[in-house]
Image 1 (cartoon, rainbow, N blue to C red):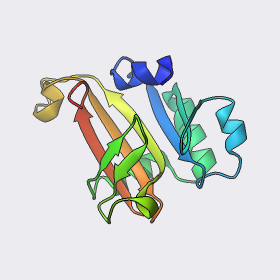
Image 2: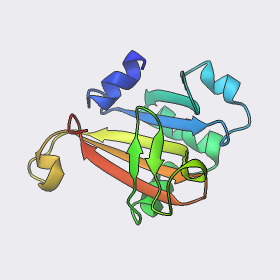
Image 3: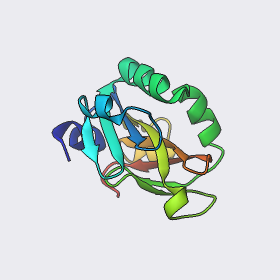
Length: 142
């Protein structure tokens, strides 16, 4: 794992986003891999928030905020170490994340719930089956 992704997952980069693209999600993974970290099923990049949103939308044709809105309707599980997940429609093979958009939110005791416990990672995915789903967790509790 590269230092940028490690810092993001530790909640140390609240002004950046993480994007993952599976090989099946984009036509030219080679170009993306020049700017990110090659992982077993694709490429992951940690970018400044606005640049990351633009890169995500440009590569997928999906507005990340629209993805977040639709994905919040279905909860699944995402692992931002392996880029595997548990789609609410099933698991395994055809249910692997096709692309992921994630950001960190700093601890906020006033909001309550898990936000009072520490920094929170929000992750939104579209599965190979087409289902959009979300996951969120307190940093260091996974």
